[in-house]
Image 1 (cartoon, helix red, strand yellow):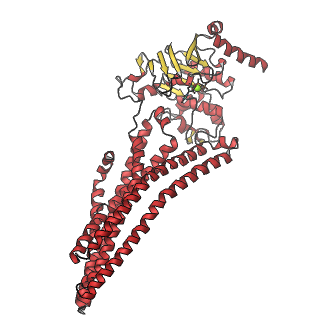
Image 2: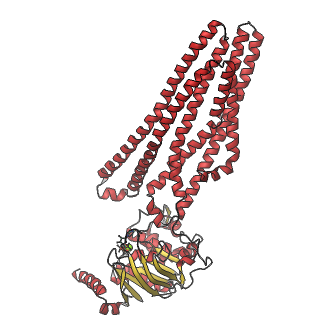
Image 3: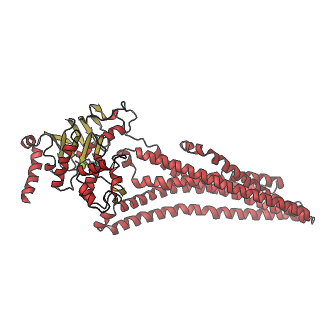
Length: 577
Ligand code: UTP
Ligand code: MG
């Protein structure tokens, strides 16, 4: 938990002043019953009106000071807690941005959302509570005990019995509550994951008429959360009545024993009323402390989960990069005996002993059956994943030597599962280059064969896109994604099945425009259709994580069995059509 101290430091003022102001309130609280006992013992007993007025005035002043302290304490407490939480949230978010794909796969997105929102709120609540109670509860406890003992040490003995009883009750409640809160947060993760998945995929759910199934799945998760929350709350609920019961019994005992002393004339009446107040204060402060402890057990569970994100080791960084200044200039790519697997404990290799060279400016096609590792292979180039064995070189330098910024800036990649963002078409394209002029954007759109359909929209480049780019067709979306990548003016452009939803005529126009506008750029094109890569300088044929053929179309057609198979199966289909 030491880790969180650095989030306190910037707000030290609030963290110190808040509790100090609360002390003002406590002093007032402890003084009030004393003034009251004076009024009863001296003023009322002696019919001394001026004395009553004087003491009444003192009480009003004290009450006003208490109010000021209370307001100030609450303000600084809230301010400190909110600022603390905001900073933690910022850092967790930044950390997630740094995560590699492998890191993200480890936590579900729903869980990350819960950690960023609910878990941090729990921590904020604890800090807020602690700032208000930290000095107030112990202060009140100590102050009231001192006053009670000073007033009547004999009667104060009652406390010796009650306080341990209450402490035992509190400790057992907290011990039962902690694991229940932990379970509760985990269930909340599941609910949030469910919400997230259902909302982002609402179209798929509707088209498969799976609405009912999703509703049931969500209801189950939600009920689960409800059960575990009630389970945790049951314990919280117990705390109040048990403490109140103990408190009432104690007051009764005090009145019983104290009453006898008053009758015997060994104790003034005013002292008895004040004593009852002090006993109540002592028990109240213990209850406050137990609330803080309970909230901490809840917040600790959350803090641990937030810490897991903060302390997660990002397994793909450029910290050890030797040539951070280096930029991708020529666009040469070389794989030397590269092997890779997604799950390190699993011995199934997704890529196995891959070696090839792509020279600057070449157009290279990659073809192979689904699941053979094409996407995995190209993801090694901009270091979306790192190779387990072997080396990936760009411009004859290991990709690990580049800064991630320079490497990824030099490598434009249109991902197979690509998305657009909420905003206009222009804003989306400008992702590739924030400072691009209108002409540059239009040129990129033209090269990607997107200009015509953009202009056919009434709002043109200002057309608003829905989240994920839902209001354009699949083929239009792919072309916008290509245009966005082109704006980066990369030295290496990777298209992962990026024209699968585009008709063949448009696709060939895109290829043509590439050969003029992107002459010097190295182009790696993954495709399902052989026609998409037929004219490439070189084609890599993959099968089950290995390269089984390399060469031009004509050569492969003669020599590579796997290539012949794909070619003829596709040609047959053409003939059938
Ligand atoms: P790829 O995603 O590299 O295959 O997965 P691909 O050649 O591009 O396939 P298509 O043409 O797009 O369909 C290669 C293998 O890696 C596994 C997959 O199960 C597949 O067998 N894989 C992929 C994972 O285990 N985890 C991932 O995140 C992605
Ligand atoms: Mg793929």
